[in-house]
Amino acid sequence: MKYKAFLFDLNGTMINDVSFHISAWYRILNELGAHISMERAKHECYGKNQELLERVLPNRFSREEKDKISQEKERQYQEEFKPHLKLISGLEKFLKQSKNAGVKMAIGSAAIQSNIDFVLDGLEIRYYFDAIVGADDVMHSKPDPETYIQCAARLGIAVKDCLVFEDAPKGVESAERADMDCVVLTTLHKAGEFSHYSNIITFIEDYSNFILS
Image (cartoon, rainbow, N blue to C red; front, top):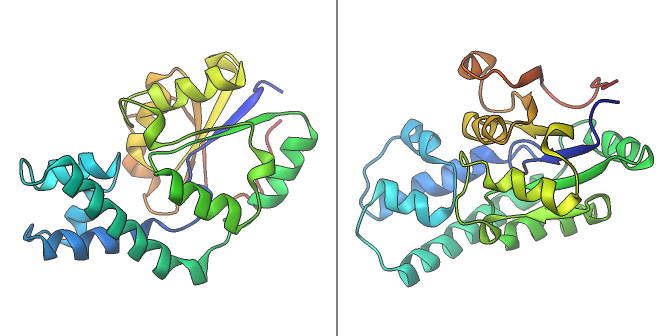
């Protein structure tokens, strides 16, 4: 097989939870006086929480205040999404097959560690992953390539031998800037929203019929 490592984004790529993140941000940002639409909340829902707050409400909060707001947002998200926590269809089988085939796997996410733990431990899938890179592990979040470059480095695999699984344009851009091919999950965004990226090898709705040779 061409690829020696699979690098997974988390939210929207392994679990179908992005709408819960958007709803939590929409509610909290408007409570803080942002007066934004749900569509604007969707557009801003990428990168680190502190960066999102600064984009929408610049120069309003101290670092400590941003951290507190971030923690409250994640508390609300986890509480609302927990009853729905499950892997996207076909992914568990794909993880097992990949592990048995000796493919290295990593998670590269802008999520904070508590959200990553919420998924990995809640679904008991930590075993599959040889490296985890989250928000606290990088200086520059997606669309910067640092997240996926770090994943490859921690696995000891060349970037050209890595395949990224993503669901968002900013994530695909991150992979492209890291010189990595990408499979796109259309859980939230339509294929047409990715037309200007050259590193996409295919689009999938889920992993049920996904076969990579």
